[in-house]
Length: 112
Length: 136
Image 1: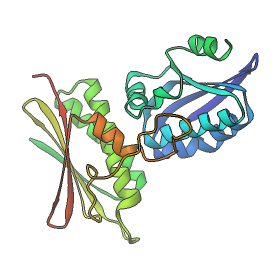
Image 2: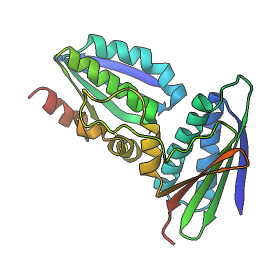
Image 3: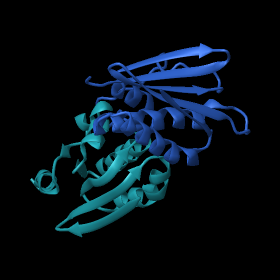
Image 4: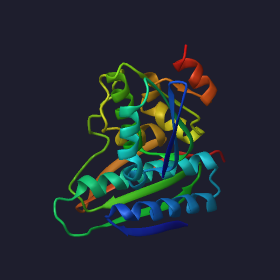
């Protein structure tokens, strides 16, 4: 998996790509946790490149959101493909992590 | 006609197994959404067996059967791990970020993704059957 980031105007965008199953999650979890622990206060996780999201990957996203909240920030998700969005909805994650269609929509939320 | 594959209970077997399930589902005429749902459920089910099913260090085999029935794609997963009924297990369903933990979503994903899930313990084996509805 890939885990890239950019910081612009106080917003960190983390772009994930690949298959976020056990193997993929193991490849990016440490970097993702570091990026969520050191960025912000606002973090956008762009899931557009994620082709598969399993329970272990959802756990990593939830852990990141909790870390950011501990630092009084907000982590939001965007760009999920239909199957990835379904996985987030079926586990109720979209009820407590704001989820948007595009990066622009996510940026509007975290900078409001 | 059914398609059967047996894999060793190792994490590195998950991706080739997933690719095979999607390939077979496609060949059986399943739409993309059903292929993705089957991929997710097989990956979660087999990962659970590999990570939690056995108490010894020896390698076990997991059998996966994929078949098309009228109105459904059916997948059966059979293993010799300790008895575990995924339908009887309690599944946490947090409603807030504060309540949410990092684990415990695999069974919820399986139950909410497949259109029907059934479990049997037969001859010392766990047999999980997943059904995905298909338009005829």
